Amino acid sequence: MSKIRKRVLVTGGAGFLGSHLCDRLVAQGHDVLCVDNYFTGRKENILHLMEKPNFEVMRHDITFPLYVEVDEIYNLACPASPVHYQYDPVQTTKVSVLGSINMLGLAKRVGARILQASTSEIYGDPTVHPQTEDYCGNVNPLGPRACYDEGKRCAETLFFDYSRRHNVKIRVIRIFNTYGPRLHDSDGRVVSNFIVQALRGDNITIYGDGQQTRAFCYVDDLIDGMLAMMGADEDVPGPINIGNPHEISMLTLADRIIALTGAKSRLVRRPLPQNDPTQRCPDITRARQLLNWEPKVPLDEGLRRTIAYFAERMPEAAATARA
Ligand code: NAD
Ligand code: UDP
Ligand code: UDP
Image 1 (cartoon, rainbow, N blue to C red):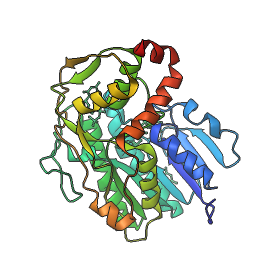
Image 2 (image 1 turned 90 degrees about the vertical axis):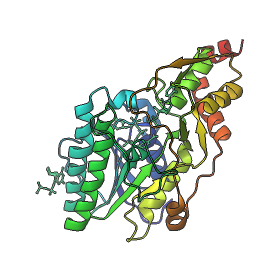
Image 3 (image 1 turned 180 degrees about the vertical axis):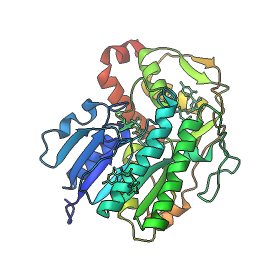
């Protein structure tokens, strides 16, 4: 139970990260308002919170204005998987740009502190490795990922302009690939794809040669970092990278998931999507120094917990895979 009870708005609160954040804030005793239009979020993710007296849900699209009275805002609303954010690219840019303007306008009116869930995608296909926060990135503004990358870049610009111009108290974190229970089984992200394929005994789809790298952070660690950032002293607006610096190739990830599920799946090659970054890994020196934060859950442990979540949802598939 937190000492000070706050009114906290979480946009995108029915999504993967948002629902875990709501869990933690509700457990701390805050009054939590979850706002979501259910584009990629699911009621199922927050069903267990519905009976809590300090939790409330509002179906709302943040590209439209929102008038509520809150002390803190976590702005997470935005589809995060390439499959979902490319489904309606104009809406994706609108969520980041118009949605951020509305949430910043709200923060300005009520004097709330506001945290933006930015992304490692603002670095694009990076030429600096690992990525530090002062690297300005290498994004193709015309490619299929641009609706997400450029939308998030513009959102960062808006956050810093509202801070400079209107003294809004901002926090910007750049989240690197995060995984865990409540990832959507059909959202196309690599960890959920590989686990679902392994549990069904299907082929594992490696895009390109599988040598491209990512660094995967377990969701509990990520939420610790997000809460630490919101609670940090006045002079830490960010941006700060939040992620796990354990970098692996997609081939290695597939191997680990096959080993941990005991699946008989084979690897199959599929074309590499356009502008797919070849390598990505956070430099988390700033997070360590300023937030005293670093991830704790090792990859195999996080994968075990995530596999258990999916196996519980699809028990027949899990049994078939090992048969
Ligand atoms: P998600 O798709 O599970 O959650 C996004 C949520 O936002 C969903 O519940 C969706 O319905 C909601 N939403 C989308 N558009 C909305 C709108 N216009 N109005 C209200 N709600 C809307 O994705 P996630 O993985 O939980 O990501 C959450 C945030 O973190 C996103 O902003 C994403 O860009 C950022 N992020 C995530 C990762 C990651 O690896 N998970 C990495 C970098 C950044
Ligand atoms: N806004 C909102 N909720 C509020 C205050 C503002 O949704 O509580 C929206 C408002 O509709 C506006 C946007 O936030 O379009 C930006 O607000 P700001 O005050 O910065 O700009 P202005 O209203 O002057 O355009
Ligand atoms: N990927 C893959 N097989 C899949 C899904 C994704 O090899 O079934 C690759 C994808 O090409 C990328 C990496 O895994 O190189 C991470 O993809 P994801 O969509 O999870 O995240 P992002 O590309 O946004 O980091």
